[in-house]
Image (tube, rainbow, N blue to C red; front, side, top):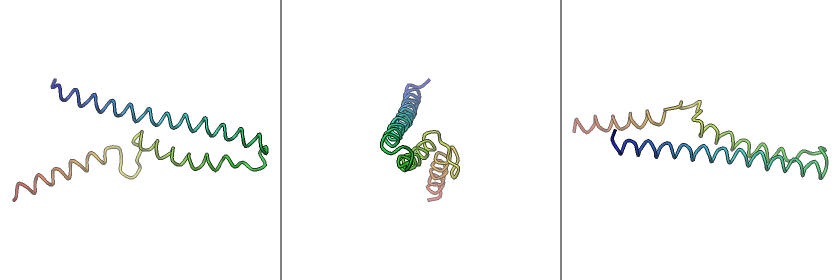
Length: 100
């Protein structure tokens, strides 16, 4: 096997692991902070007004999109859309150069 191929695979795997670590760090922070806010909310006024849900909802939307990006769950473009599009554009450019 070619050294550059192995190095490239290693770099891609390392980037993927970093991406997963960031997501799970964000998820852990979300759970801890929202739990803390819920506890403070209950301590201050019981459940008469659950204001911590505003923070949970706002951060939850961001976490949802982070998960979609991390796990490549994109309902609009599919799993490999970006790679296919890059290849398509490169092939198109290559064909245009042939005819010039």
